[in-house]
Amino acid sequence: MNRYGVLWNADGKFGGAAQMIQRVGEKYSQMTFLSTPPEAIPSGTVSGLEGLIRQAGVWGSHFLACELPAESDLLPVFRHVEFNIWAHQTIFRFRGATSSSPTLAYRWRLWNGSDIPAMVKLHRGLVPSLFQPIEPVTRKRMLGLVLYHADGHLLGYADLDYGSRGIWVLPFLLPEADDSQVLIDLVASLPAALGRPIFICARSYQPWLADMLRSPEFEARPEEVLLVRYLVVRAVQAEVQTRLLPEAAQGERSVPLTPIVRAARRQSQIPKR
Image 1 (cartoon, rainbow, N blue to C red):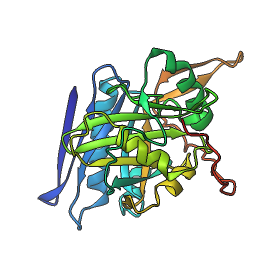
Image 2: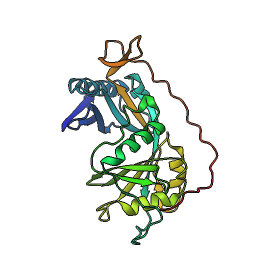
Image 3: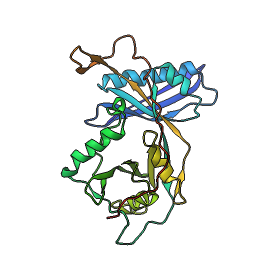
Image 4: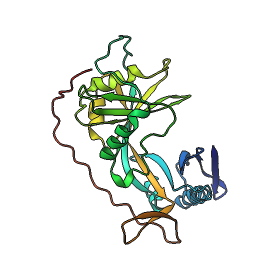
């Protein structure tokens, strides 16, 4: 794993610090830490972010990603160095009791190679095509879970990442899986949870997830924005093929965003299996 940090001063005082990582085999960098004092000078933060951007380019990253609180005062600073918001997210912590029943209403299981084509198809239908390079089908940290309808089609899957501070879960679910019990049973199906904190991520391109998670078993954290700073630009040829080119002196313009409008909620009619 590559790891890089910057520390900057302003007027002889601590101005801020930030850190990013790039995991082996991945073509992007992730900012993991940012700290600035209340009196921080924006120009100092700009120089710190530019240092991260340069190093991410040295690593060959296609983009640098990060999360910020939705109400952060630093958003204008990030926009100044050409970060763009590509989605919003709310993290929900599981506060309920994990079921010990051997028979769950919804039977999640570990995925295997035969599930991948259906997962790819579902991912392409849920994640806007512009952001699919940012949001992969899976981060490949470990095997995740899948849930099938009784008729055999894939209702959803969950990407998992286990860490020292808990378990991170990113579900990809069709809107027809509109039942909070789906996610409660997902938590109960997590392998080797061992009492660790469990966090489920609901992103704005799946607005029904946040609705499903607003139940007594889950506690919402403040909304965050997901930011991306592209380090390559797309060159579109006449035959409508795309390829990646190193970023030129002039940065990429703002990413056009399309608002997601959710249809009215419908009563769930999912046969349980």
